[in-house]
Image (cartoon, rainbow, N blue to C red; front, top):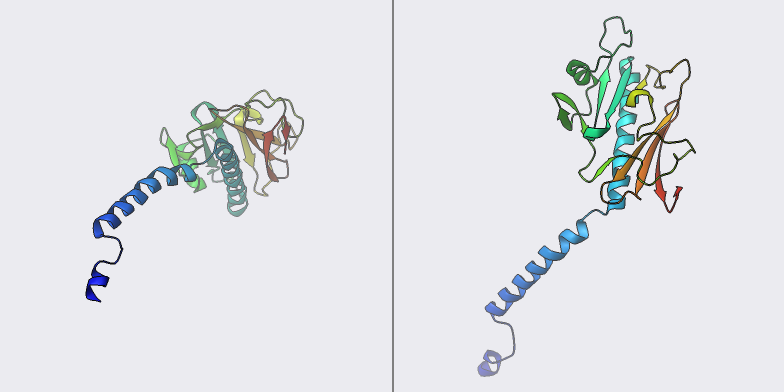
Amino acid sequence: MYDRLRHAPGFTIIEMVIVMLLFGVMAAVTVPRAMRTSPHQEVHQAARQVMRDLESARLRAISAKRVVRVSFYTSKKFYAAFMDVTSDRTGVISETVSEARASRFLVRASDSGIPGADVSKRVKFGVGGASSGPRGESLSGPVAFDDDRLEFDPRGMLRPVAGVRKGGVILITHEDDPSLVSAVTVTGSGAFRTWDYRDGEWR
């Protein structure tokens, strides 16, 4: 009986090690591919992040009872928040480092000492293949706000431009595929929405 057990079919330690090594190689090849984000997801996620940051700017303006500005530097793929730090709350903002630090958020990146945020590596601010904005507006650039910036007043509403609380849109596209475009719209009352441009229409 001992001889039968000794000669029974099975796996040697060397065979098991070889199988485990093969599994490791296969996992090293397939897992990164499965986890890689698609261009569509990258653009959509970037738009969602911009929207969350704008929501944070609005809430900061309300909690501090001061004007908060978000400025977009489209050529640098960078944006930053600034808060009015004047003693009498005049709402005057000069986009200084101290104003950016006073806003207390958007500190994921830095440009010339100013804390802010970058869009992810393979996306950028741009209209891509979109022929018009999600609400039918004509597009002259990726950020449809005066001077590529928007300001929230202490009530969380957009500050008026020439007496009008105008909304606007921020567009993001993919560097490798301009047909992929996502947008963030902001109304004058401070409401946000994200959109995706697919097959020639906004959804």
